[in-house]
Amino acid sequence: MTHRQRRNLIDFVMRWVLRLAIGSAAATLLLIVGVITWRGLPGLSWEMISQPPAGSFYLGGGGGVLNAILGSLALATGATLLAALIAVPVVLYLHGYAGRSRLANGLRLALDVMWGIPSIVYGAFGFSLMLLVGLRASLLAGIVTVAFVALPILARTFDEVLMLAPKELREATLALGTTRLEMLGILLRQTLPGLLTAVLLAFGRAIGDGAAPMFTAGYTDRLPQGLTEPVATLPLSIFFQLSAPYQSVQTRAYASAVILTAIILVISVMAQFTSRKLGRHIIR
Amino acid sequence: MIQHHSLATRNLNVWYGRTQALREITVDLPANQITAIIGPSGCGKSTFLKSLNRLLELNAGVRVDGEVLLDGRNIYAPGVDVTTVRGRVGMLAQKPFPLPLSIYENVAYGMKIHGVRHSQIDGHVERALNAVGLWGEVATRLKAPATSLSGGQQQRLCLARAIAVEPEILLCDESTASLDPISAQGIESLLLALRGRYTLVIVTHNIAQARRLADYVMFMWLGELVEHGPAAEFFDNPRESLTQEYLARRIG
Image 1 (cartoon, chains in turn blue, cyan):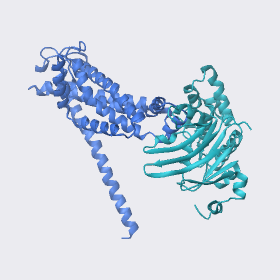
Image 2: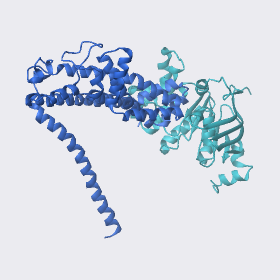
Image 3: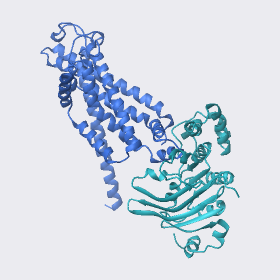
Image 4: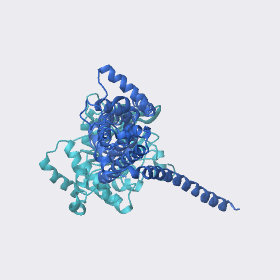
């Protein structure tokens, strides 16, 4: 075999290795969606998404998971907004004023550690925080706790997006005589689609998290009543239904999983669409 | 002759960490003329240029010592407002780099931040785009993204953006290097047209370009200013042997 033939052979083999990896990744997603759809489809009904559970819901009675759908949406939206409210200024400060200082690198390390902490730990932390301030399990306590889970994801993703923004853009902007803050405004215009991705990732984690809200948001069969009342969440709802010893309730657990997946899918597609609009002026 | 504004450096030294990039640069840049800075890569041309609008500060670990005098005042003195300095000393970068905004907003942005009245901005935008010969090409699509323009058009847009702020001095860092020959020629003739109204300082690798444009030339070598003087004198009778060898392309 000549040298050239060998290189071509390696190229050929590696191409198929890479394709295999892509295939497995795609297959995993399809398999997950396929299995939950297959098992959950019989349980899907208008009643499931339009009504809260009736009294005997977990024993196979009527009703649906509207309590958990609304609860999850409220919790995840609140937590993501709260996380963004803190993360965006933090990251903008890092990029506008702190540069690659010790403070910046220390903060990045701290956020990475926060990212790795399991959400059950946040749940326990949120629970003790609640006791400290005399708050009971409620939407508000859940939002605050889940915001801790979402914060590092949002902050570090946005941070990485800003790091990818071309250095020349900062120079070009500052050379016009802008203040640092005005420069950050331009940088934000450039990175809006990336920020949206960061928010979406955080939202996905927030809405899918079961452990943190378990201690802090509580659970209820009622629809969300307000910030100081407990709320149901889809992951917990799925957990309770799956734990029921009845086949029909377990089927509805899968149906609830389909609903949760569909919510994430719809939001992702919407984000893609908005991202394209926001990215109209981006410099590549 | 009364000069409206003056730009000079006195014993300017710049370090990147422990590496010294500029050594004792003392020079008076002639007002309303084109000064070309030539020299091999890494000789400190860009560093010198960026020291003139304090853009150097963006690099971590930079230390500046000595003075850059704008109308006799050191721009590195404490209490000097850097945004005002950069408003007076504009810059055109090597690669065209529009802001992530529309064509119109690219030109209007600088004026807005410098407090030009809203009612006047439309007129100024048109004037600036006209000055760079872009108005006819973009008048009907001012709202389009700046990135929809070609490279040469983008560089002219960047020039319009810079002069819309009405600086007194314009720094150009190899501003034609990334353009095709026709676009490069377009920028060159624009720079010649701006001469007389602005003090232009251009960095160039291209000796022929320096000959075409410059009234005054600075030749730098390893962070030092080897020779500087009026262009005719500099090119016809270089005093230093280093300059002679560089111009004859025997070194660098």
